[in-house]
Image (tube, rainbow, N blue to C red):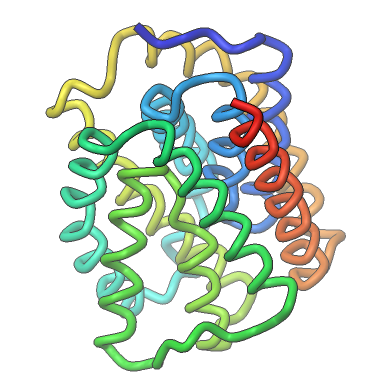
Length: 245
């Protein structure tokens, strides 16, 4: 049975995460999972966030197919779908206490990389894209987090802001569905998960609407910078709570 976090806190986490998603095309899962993991088990938070991610992707899909880099998207998706089963096994077979620590360290480390503007040691060829896609698929299934690593890679390809955002939207939509299906097959998704996701849809919708409006007024660089600071702050709060427990 999924544990019930404080209603106001869970709605606030989803609302803020949805603003980030509507603004940048990524970041929803990273913000939401770090926030919700403060008040509920990671094994409950991951399928809940995947349900909300799929709903947010449906809202954002309208123009994404036309603007996305289709060749890049196909390469990433093929590798990601191979990585999803690894993430499902990791979530189901690891100690939740240490898995939660891994989430905070992963998010905090990637945020620091982004703030320091240090490029990840990745190439730009098909092999590098395959590695990033596969690792991102595994991370999404295990932690519901794949955005920071993928964005760090794609930012080195110098895509236009619109193409980057659209490619990310389509990528996450497909991989989230695959990851949620994998968790469901392993008994990791309960009816209570769907009910809680439905209860959080208003906060999700309002956040996405606000984020899309902000997209017209905030430069991509400032949006990315704000997102990195938010992720770092949440990761630090999570580490503090983990240490106290």
